[in-house]
Every structure is written in structure tokens, then in C-alpha cells.
Amino acid sequence: MEQKIHKVSSVDEVLAHHNEFLDACFKECMLRNPRLLKILTKLMSICITFSKHIEKVYVDFVAVYPPDRDDKGKLLPLQSRFGRCEEQLRTGTEHAKKVLESKGFQGTITKLERTFNTHLQYLIKALKTFSQSECDPYLSNLSARLDYNGFYEHHLFSEGD
Image (cartoon, rainbow, N blue to C red; front, side, top):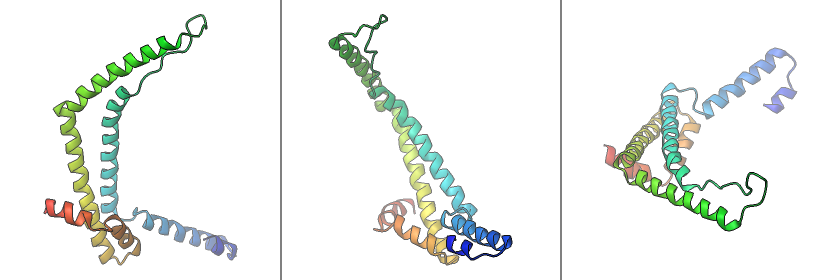
């Protein structure tokens, strides 16, 4: 686009080249096809939901370090600081273990995984379909890269069909 812009002689030509550039961006980012966009949006929302569930447990594994100094600004002994930190970590770890072992948490993660795999399967099938029907090299390339070794074709599609 930069080279084309240097050769323009009117604002209309700038707008035309800019529109070509935007069209190429939309095409490469799969924003022109509403079906693909819907599947991508669903996959992203599943990823966000998963990260929020994992974050709940992660917080329990991270120790909250106590302050180094007391109210008067005097440095606290190292042993007392580490003792409090160790106790917080132990309590948090016990809570995290309970959460991880609970059937509700495991069920939620399993359900998210199944939903993600299902929508990933939809995405790969849609990419293959649209890359063939629209003769779109970007979709064809992406489809090939996502399933370059046939993993999804073999595992997900054989389970889902």
C-alpha cells in the first residue's frame, strides 16, 4: 500500500487504495464471513471463561507476601516474614486442592474443553468449506496450518461424527 500511496495524484486514489487495504485486512482476519466470525467469537469467549476459572485457583497458589516493615518502619525479622508467607501459601494450597478436586470444578473444565473442541471442529470444517467454495488462499492456508498433521481430522472428527 505504501508504494501505491506514493504514486497517487488525487484523494480518490488514496481512498481507493485505503479501501483495498482494509478489504485485504478484513479478508485475512476472517472478518468478512459472519459464520467464521461467530465461531471465532465463541472460541474466544470459551477461552476467557476458562481463564477466569483457572484464575480462581491460581490466586490460591500465589503467596501474598507480607510487608517487610512494621508500623514504625522497622525491618521485620526474615524468619517471621517467611513464616507468615509459608502459612498463607499452605492455607491457599489447601483451598486450591479442594477446589481442584471438587466435581463442580472438574465438570466445568471438562464441559469447557468439550465445547471448545466442538467449536474448533466447526471452525476447521467451515475454513475448509469456505476455502474451497470461495477459492480463498488465506482460508486455505489457515486451514492447512491449523490441522497440518491431521490431528484434528483424526481425533476430533472421528469422535464427533
